[in-house]
Image (cartoon, rainbow, N blue to C red; front, side, top):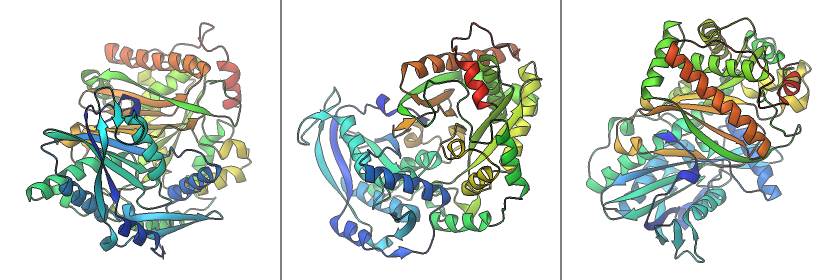
Length: 501
């Protein structure tokens, strides 16, 4: 399993077939009454944005995708039954949401009303063009248009699935609204569907993870509200959030270099992905971190702080890390969006080397994790109450994530190991950093503003990331350099003064 950009996905020649809800199932779903379980906090914020974007006529891009290769001659009926079992197995996938006057209401489709069908759409040729679906167009454009139109939790199903069939195998793909999924879910989804497919096709039992209880996305949302009720503005964890944000003026973290976008403006995203270390290098980097009492995330955070120091002259580092939240309500194997966020903040002006800084970074990650159960609305309210400007708080923050795909339940199965996941491509003013590790490498994925200025600034930033990781692996350490006038981003320091006031 790996994360890559949709532009790199090319399943090759074959027959495109799409899985869709039956008319009867769609009608029953539309008539499903309101359900008392609330939306989760992340779902609420996301769905309000989705509703506002739809009302403006904007293209929906807030979805996640996954694709993999499945061996053996294709059986359409078996796939339909597999998708049906997959959907009924995860109650979050049976939900859709109504948003009216800012109020988000959940609707739950009864399991007996879930039904799918499969239909042939056309042929995909060797050049990636689709014929037979009306006017000839590119396969990838057809599929992303379908995701934009159908992978929305404002109706059911909030996902779109299909296959590209060829002799002795097929490509399986899925696009799902982010309200119903996250990176962990997408990593597991198609391996589970493939397991169910083989079970339906061959009459065999499913594997241990596909047969294990999944937990309930609805129960998670209820438990999340109960957990949130424990926190007040005076709670130590909330105060720690405010303290972490103080170094950047009390608001959410932004990318520390000037990307050339005025405050409040964004640009279309351009996905970027590159290897940071090969498998041996990643193992050596982890060994160096652990020798200093740090895990991989602590080491990665220390490297990024050093890049900020070297390129921008930063004296403080502040980011928000995304963490899995799957122990709450025991949703380890459940499809859904189960994340919490941790503030990671520490000073970087006194350390001279990586080995001096990595322990500080690791401790900051641990402190942040202890604050991560505070719900996002509580954090936002506390920052605003502390006097942070709304334009600095009510924004999408710069984020950091680390996922080790080698540790997932179905790692080692063909459908998992061949898998790839991506995100929809909307707009951004940041360049959040998604570090991922598999058996091949440690690599970085990011979505940057698609402007010449951002490309130049981030090109230098990404190059320095690679250089510092390589130096640590080669020598066991890295001496932090001072920001110099040779910095290729001349507006850096004036930008930093704004971000770290």
